[in-house]
Length: 89
Length: 89
Image (cartoon, rainbow over all chains, first blue to last red; front, side, top):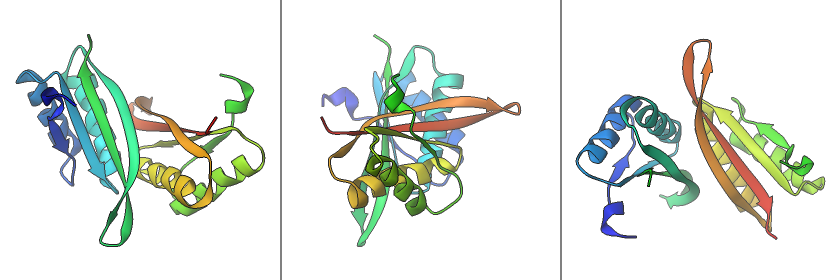
């Protein structure tokens, strides 16, 4: 991964629109791609944040890739999501 | 899409393991691919169901594609997820 892919927004318990605004700010500050990451129940909110940022805040940015996986945290398996948004080339 | 892609599990409010078992049953009944679909807060559970089915119930099946989008339902925007699981070729 190149340096331009190091913009990561971690989604937690705030309203999705806060994360969507943070994603938009990254692009406005010159990022060409932003990762949105979340675990467990925050996964739904991460998808909301991605959709809100694409549909309301940004133009010329698309969902490039969505990956799901499992992490072991304190002996429990927790699902994760990683959403890559990128400027349309 | 070919006919083999018409196996769809809709994830709602039951425990994720129920949907994971339903996914596994589809493959055991001969499906070569299964879609898991969910909306709103059930998105996190859909990811859990996919991960549980892959990690606990199935061998030789992989997550082929994950797509997120937005649907308008009763004048509200609702995020959706679609996870495609397929037998490894």
